[in-house]
Image (spheres, helix red, strand yellow):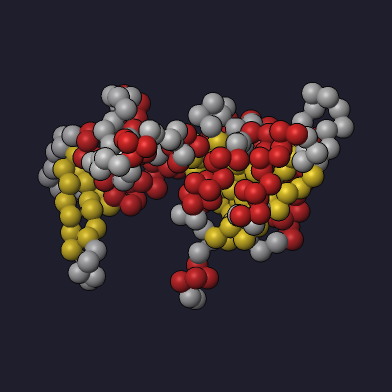
Amino acid sequence: MSAEAQIPKLAVLIDSDNVSHSYVKPMLEEIARYGTPTIKRIYGDWTQPESAGWKNVLLENAITPIQQYRYTSGKNCTDSTLIIDAMDILYTERVSGFCIVSSDSDFTRLATRLREAGMLVIGIGEEKTPAPFIAACDRFVFLEIIAPKSEPEEEKKKPEPEPQRRGKVPKEIRKLVRNSVNDVADEDGWAFLGDVGNMILRKNPAFDSRNYGYSKLTNFIKSLGMFEIDKRDTSNRGIKHIYIRDVNFVQTDK
């Protein structure tokens, strides 16, 4: 099987009522990290004046707009249309995952159902997204992280080092990381960082080192000061595997 065939094919379904068109470009770049968006659809009532800003964005990014009229005031028909399309795609299209872009908890059951069918489910929404929807996804990414507010032009010109933490990492996150390391560690306490990252995401789909100001998980782990780090050579001279171990690990006699 070719490397290209192994890349997940994703259906990207966007709730226009819950996302600004200014997020689209960085959002699609983020999605490309997880697979190829073979289906890109956005749902909304395009007859409304507030939808005018979407026109160029949709054309530039080859996103198909799906019209949904607001039949009743106060009712969100967009959600129902997106859900119906998702189920149609599940049974008729050859995709291996879905990306649901919304901050609406109404999609919680949809995400759960897609995962039950063996689909990869990635959620993207604002930090206000309710916890049940986040937990129903394999991974959840906050829009504020992938598309932060623009900075003044003079500040953009300054080269910046690895960003610092926004603040102290919460105790529950430190505990999550430590427990995840212990879950996948070998008898000597060493855990492959890639396995640790996967375990963390299975426990907390919203975890992202960028939430704490670090673009890479490795730098986030270093900042905690809780682990030994061992970079090991591989058969590829340009690649090293990173293993970590709890600094409090005690070797027991067999």
